Length: 361
Ligand SMILES: *Cc1c(COP(=O)(O)O)cnc(C)c1O
Image 1 (cartoon, rainbow, N blue to C red):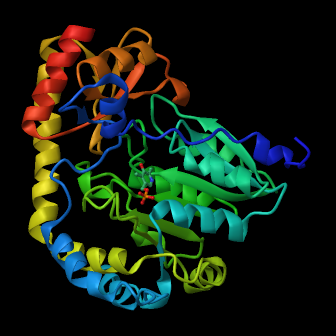
Image 2: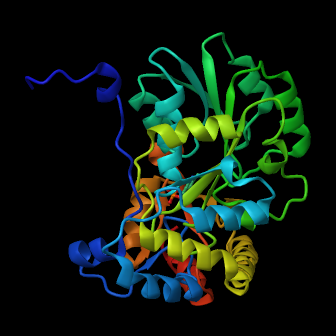
Image 3: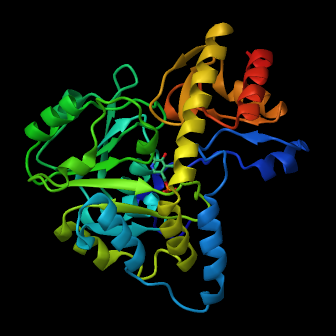
C-alpha cells in the first residue's frame, strides 16, 4: 500500500465480537439459535427504558444534551459524587478510548492483565503506547505481578473486575495493597461492567477509591445488567480534573438522545435489575449442578459468564455447538485453546446449552 500506516496501528488485532444470531441463520440456515456468547441480558431490555426511548423518538431532530445532564444528575445522587466526576460514553468502550487517547503518548506503557477485555490492548496501541501484558495467575489478576511490571514509563493500569473472560475478582485486601504501593501519577482504570452480578463480599469496589490520592477511574455500562447493549451507553467516574480532560477530547454529542433517555429510565427500573441479577444467579447455580453431573470442568464466576474447559480444540467445539444452534465464544484468541466462554441465558436456553454440551463434548 502507498499510504504509510504507523507500525503500532498495523500491529493491532481487530476485535472479534460474538457471532450475531442473524449471521448464523444466514450462513447455516439455522433458525431459533440462542446466543450465549456476548454476556448480554437474556431478559431483553428494561421495559421502562423501551418506554422512555419510544417517547424520546419525537425529539430526534434535536441534538442530544452534550453533557447528558439528566443522567449525570441521577448518577450523581445515586453514587454520591458531584456531577463533575462523571463522563458519559457511547458504551464504556468509548471511555476506554477517551482515556487512552487523552492520557497516553507514544512510548508510554499501560499494564494489561492478560487475558482480559480485548479493547484495552487495541486502544493502548491506537494511542501509540506500549501494552505491557501481565499473565493471570490461576485465572485471577495478581496485584504483585502488576506492581512488578511498573516502570518509570508506566502511565496506566487496567483492572477488569470481575475480569472478562475469567469471571474472577480482586479482593479488597489485594487492591488496598496494590494501590498503596503504586507510585503516584499512574491512572488505575477499573472496568466494572459486571459488578452488579458479584456475590463475593470480599470483592473490591472502585467507587470507594475515587476520592483517594491516587487516580482511580471506575467504568460502568448499561450494556449488561440493564440490557441495553444495542443502545450504546456507559459512564466513567473519576476526579473532576480528569473528567474535565475527557470532556475536552470526547465527541461533543457522543451519547445519543435515545441512549440518554433509555439509561435514565433503566436506572429507575429496579425491578428489572433485580430480576436480571436473580435470573443470572439462578442460571449459574443450575449450570454448575448440571456440569458437575456430566463431569465437565468449569471455573466458577462472579459475573454472568464463565469458562468451560472443553478438553479439546475450542474452535472446533464452537463450530459444533453452532450446528446445534448454540452460539458460544471460543477462547482460542484469548490464549485458552481448549476453553469456551458462555453466559447464562433463560432457563430453557440453559437447558439447551447443557443438551448441546452433552452431545458435543
Ligand atoms: C461488555 C463489556 C464492556 C461494555 O462495553 P460497552 O461498550 O459499554 O457495551 C466493557 N468492559 C468489559 C470487560 C465488557 O465485557
